[in-house]
Image 1 (cartoon, helix red, strand yellow):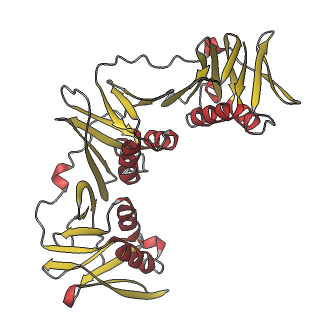
Image 2 (cartoon, one colour):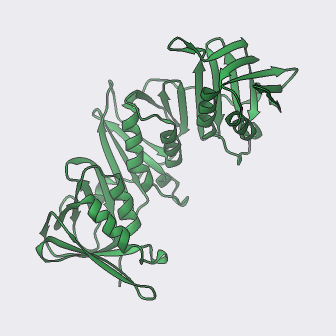
Image 3 (tube, rainbow, N blue to C red):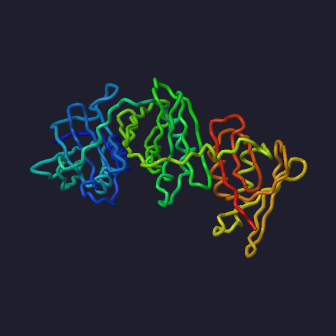
Length: 378
């Protein structure tokens, strides 16, 4: 195998596939990156058997030559060393040659590295996916959906299903739900494409986080293919496979209250900053609890009290407060996480009592729902 490639494109592709490579694997060859040179271009593959990423660099794009293929072939190179080497090469082009066995020479300018590669035949094959159930989402919307939900997945392995995001597709819409049983984030969006039937799958939060890092902020469509145990995301020159989590996701529709006893409309930034300040004295050990109380003339009091440290209180003027008086305590971290995902300058919070979950929406966008369970304080 021998080819000459533009360094910038090489670095980008290697960085993308590195997101699937882990040093903690029981299959030694998966600590490497597979490189395959063919007439059309070069393909890089990284996998940890949960996530697999394939990045393709065509020989030319928009009339410019990116790769010159001298000899076809394939090799697996140690990912850690290879990725560090390509980042630090001196010139704009890199020549990669495999000779006698698996000896691999990487040349750029006057720098030359020799790496011992592994047999690409030993590298596990990527899943073969039947492309029957597929739909499209623009890349920027997909990134937004991930950002607005994935933070609420559980980090505890006691209920593995909650470490993923539940994607439901029906009637030309997608609904993505994440919950760790203390909070919930839900985002709905319309879909393009002819969709038959309904799907409900659970995609690991870790997979979605890595996917989001690789996708560009463009309106280019990402094709999503769902099978029984895999999901495939296809963007231009990029394939991202992830296994799905097994098991039934809990029915979260029952969690979301339909009525409201107290409704508050408030400026998102003012509310977020007041909670951030109140959390400064809220002790970490008590889950960073702050208290919200409604007062006269549409004022909210945000406060926290830690006996051995001190207390803080601040008044926030709302746009409106309707309904019953309320005192409620909640995790400042959960509230700040939720507020950061909402778009628009004003939010609406619907409370149904001091010990019931409450719901947060953007005033002008009902497509995203954030729900938080209050904390019992004595």
